[in-house]
Length: 294
View 1: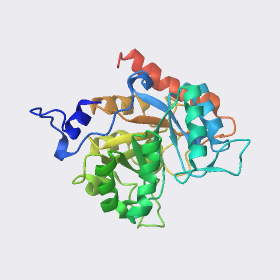
View 2: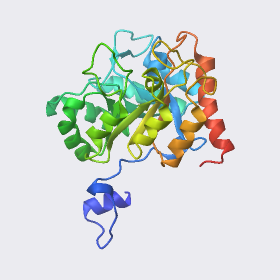
View 3: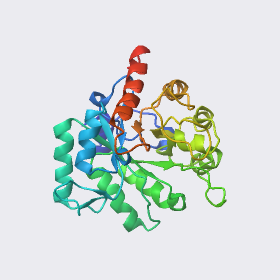
């Protein structure tokens, strides 16, 4: 048992642990999944032309150690009609766990997933994340924050608000704006924060490093991207070859003490993206090793 668990169980007394705003920090990702100072792997959407079991294999092949799942991916070539999501059967969950163990990959996050304001429905997402040993879930369901905060406290599982690009024809879509997201989370439990999608910030015309600074202390995870250009219509490129200044992003994350997962989400030439995805993962690991980050 960890010290935190002993305290909760009442097995230790007279020990004081400071936690921000009385919130407990979510369980950390185990150190063996860290490389170059970061927990880096893939968002399974990178492999959405393939199945969940293939996505795990490909993440390992690309050099990743962690994976972030999304709802609705087909399970396997042998069971293409079985979908992977928070309503998966125990048998399906066991198959995925066995595949993760086979390839030494850790499931750390789940999303982007819509989460209901209805506590009974929302609880299904948190139960799934708990069963899989995940650190966080990723969503854009900001209308459900009261429900989410209650379940964050109960399950000790973090919630990360994701940003897609600005929608010029839809002013009601606001989570592209880091200042707006900060206004939503700043007075919430410290385990409620942000999934920083650097590419979508760039597609919105924003500087990803400045966005990270605005949201300092609230970065839970990242969908890390580099793009060939700023603005709408830009596509992913290998890290270090585009406009997003990946070294500066990594420096800022490290400066903030970021302990979440970096998910490479590569959405260009997706049927043949393995060399580019491996180059992205290698960039993060190599940059961190060169800086001697632990």
